[in-house]
Image 1 (cartoon, helix red, strand yellow):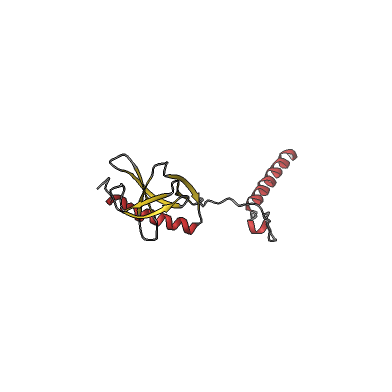
Image 2: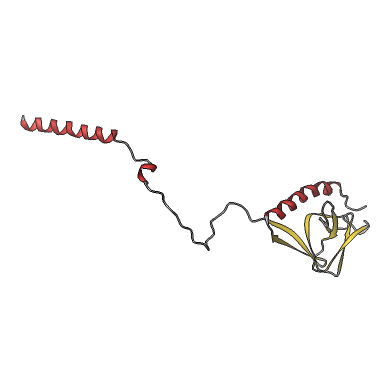
Length: 155
C-alpha cells in the first residue's frame, strides 16, 4: 500500500509541475534583450536593395551628320541634326513601308524627332542613369507613345 501511495503522490507532483510550467510566462523579445544592440556595417559594403538600377536605351551617332526628321521616313522634312558621337535617348521605334527602322528621339525638351535606326548610322546601347534622368526618360516614352500611334509608315 505504501508503494501505491508513493506512486499516487508522484503522479500528483508531476501534474502540478506540468501545470506550473504551462502557466509560467513566456519570455518576449523585450524581456530577452535588456540592452540596445548595435549592429555595425562595414563602410565599403553595400546593403542589398530591391530598387532596380535605372537603365535607358540610348543611341550614339556613327556618321558625321545624322538628320532628325519630322516623321519616320526620308520624305519627311528635316527638323535638326546630330553630329558624330552625340548621344540621344530612344523613346520608341517603327519600321516603315520601305522596311527601314526609324527611332523616335527627344532632341530637345518638349519635342520629338525621328532618325534612321540602321546600325551603319547609329549604335544602340543601354546606359545606367540617375533616378531623375530615368523618370524624365520614362515620362517622355509615355508621351512618345501618342506620337507613335499618330505616325504613319510613310507620307
